[in-house]
Length: 66
Image (cartoon, rainbow, N blue to C red; front, side, top):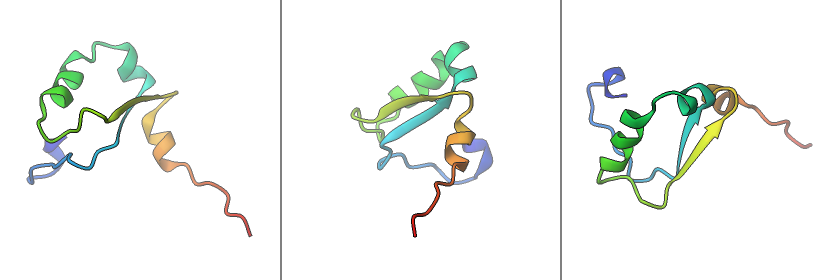
């Protein structure tokens, strides 16, 4: 994740970690260890699996009521 920016990422306000189904079913130990070892991630954060992909959840646009 740090490869996309030259700044240090801060996860102190992270409430949910969202991963896709493919990542969840593969060897995801390095990814999970990354988050577990980060001292700035709260231990109360949720780990969620999006089916089929996390980006689809993030791109979702709900209909606005009028």
